[in-house]
Image (tube, rainbow, N blue to C red; front, side, top):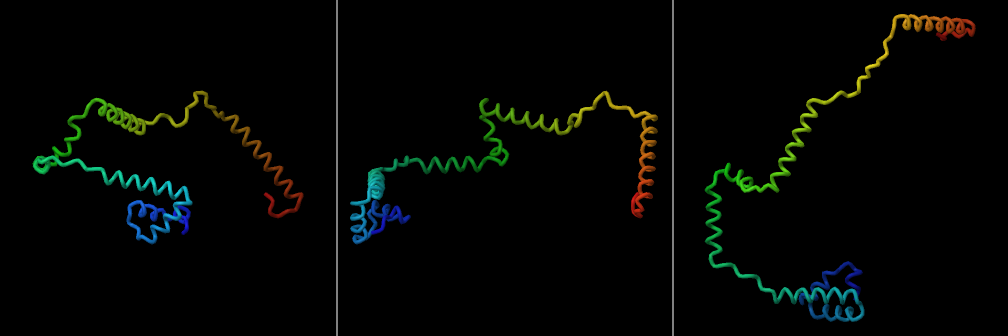
Length: 162
């Protein structure tokens, strides 16, 4: 028999532990369990679990369970939709109210910051003032450079130069 764990078939071991295998497959698996420690360990654990489930008894339901359940359902149906919506917030202790209040304050502050943002870039009080004589000097320099460009183009004989 191939190893159920290596063959990715652990369901075979679980069926063995539950006692649901046919006798010939169970006999072949028992021979494999005699030589494979991993499969034997898994089968023993599953067998112990099934035995524990067999001896476990569920607690009994109280005799008036149905009556209490139906009366609670009737009380819930009688409440209006508004009362059902507000009910979880009524008995709210301080330990639950404090995080909600802090979250509301954070959302309010974020909204205020987004509505009235500060300056995007700081305005420097020492901004440069461009004077008329600086502009005139810059324009003169540009004219001088254009004159050099046209004289170079005329000497080179290139038709598309400046």
